[in-house]
Structure formats: structure tokens, C-alpha cells
Amino acid sequence: MVSILLKVLWGFERKMRATNDNNMELPPAVWLGFPIVSLLIIWLSPLLGYPRWKGLMTGEYGFVESATFVILLPVIVLAGVLSARFLRFPVLPRRPALIMAAVMLFSCLAAFYFAGEEINWGQIWFGWKTPEEWAAINYQQETSLHNIEGMSILNNIPRLMMLIATIIGGIILPLLLLRWRRKPGVDRKIWYYLIPSWRIIPASLIAACISIPAKFFGKGSDENLIPADYTYSYMAFVANGGEMKEYGFALVMLLYILGIYLLVKAQTRERC
Image (cartoon, rainbow, N blue to C red; front, side):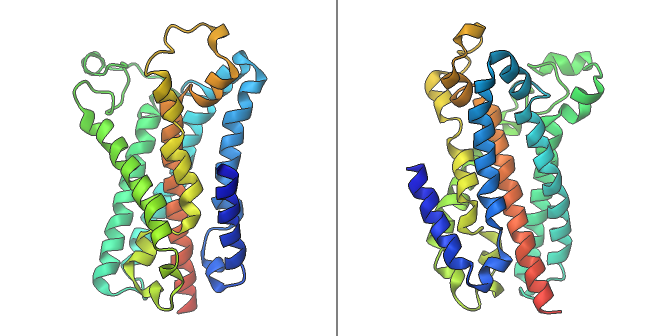
């Protein structure tokens, strides 16, 4: 199934390489390379054995957590830049341009919150002690907002919203608008910039599906496991399910913002 999907996507890419559209879209090394490399790291690292895998892939300094934060940094910068650019974007009418500026500003703030929470706003680096009052309401005793008791609006709701946005905006709509994006004049429509192209689908599939095996295994059931229980299948497909989903969301955000940045850059250059 995966190989068939990749062949279909690569077929679209080859077809687009002969058109100007390809010059304004994410290159294959990005839209396909990032997801493939991510999966290879996740699936091959268990072959190093449990001790090395645990050191490399788990914890606050592991690959998944660290890469999630690093990926979000360019999202913050580029989304902020795009918010300012859309205010004077020569292609879209004033109102759609303002809407896109607001969407980019929201994306910038969302990525900033996401990144800050991922590193507990610097606590995992600088190691300050969580204030007693804060530790009493934070079930992980960390300087973070999403782990506050009874505040699912800061954790579960954003995750659910991101999942819905990934499935609808990162898989369904790009497929539905596949032919529409190739029509003349669509670059003067807000949907051309708001909805990503089909090239975001591989990253979206990772974000939407990477934690499914963990849900079948059972939430929290790894707490009583011993090292011998960490088989290859468990380490590659089950462990860190929640963190890998967050990594997938960060990757989707990066490719989404990068795609818009390339479109805006190309359109601005053409009209200069």
C-alpha cells in the first residue's frame, strides 16, 4: 500500500517537473525525503539494541523530542515573515491577503507555543526547579501548560484540532483540489495558498497514522515493561507513539509553511 502510494505521488511529481508549477512547489528532497528519512530513523534505530535505542530515541534529549523542537524553529520564523509579506502581497485582493496574514500569524504563535511546551520553556536545558505551587497542579511536575491538571484545552484539544487539520487539510483537500490547482489564474485565489498541495500527503500520513499501533497496544501499558519486553516491533512501532505523533505534526507544519513560502516568493519575483 505504501509503495503504491509513493509510486503514484512520484508519478505526479515527474509530470509536474515539466511545468512551471514544479518551480513553485516543494522539491522531492523535501516533501518525500523528510518523511522517508524520519521513518528510517524510527524503524532502524531499534536494530542498535535496547540500550542505544533508549539513549537515542527516548527522553527529553532523544531524537524525537529534540527534532520536534528544531523543526518548529523555522516554522516560527517563516510564518512570522509570511504574515508580514501577505500584508503587501501583490497577487491577492486586500481581504484574502489579510486573512492569509492572520493565518500565518496564528501559525507562528501556535508553533511558538508548541516549541516552548516541547522543551518546558527551557527547563530541560537550564534545569531550574519547578516552583512548588506549579508542581502541585502539573502532573509531571514540569514548567509546562499542557500538563496542568484539568486543563485539557491546552493539551488534548490542540492535538485533536491538529489531527483534524492534518487529515482534512493535509490529505483530503489536497487530493480534491489536485486538478483545480493546475488551472490558469488559481494563483490569485486564497485557497491556492491556504490549502497545501498534494506534496504534503506523506508527512500528513505519518502524523495521522504513526501512533495507531500504540493505541492498539494500550495506553500506559509500557510502564511495567522490562528491557527484555522491548522487542523490535515494540520499539519501532509502539514506543513513543505520542511523541512521534507530535513530531509528525511539527513536520506537517514545516512543510506547510515552506510550501506557502515558496509560492509567495515565486509569485512576488514574477511581479517585480
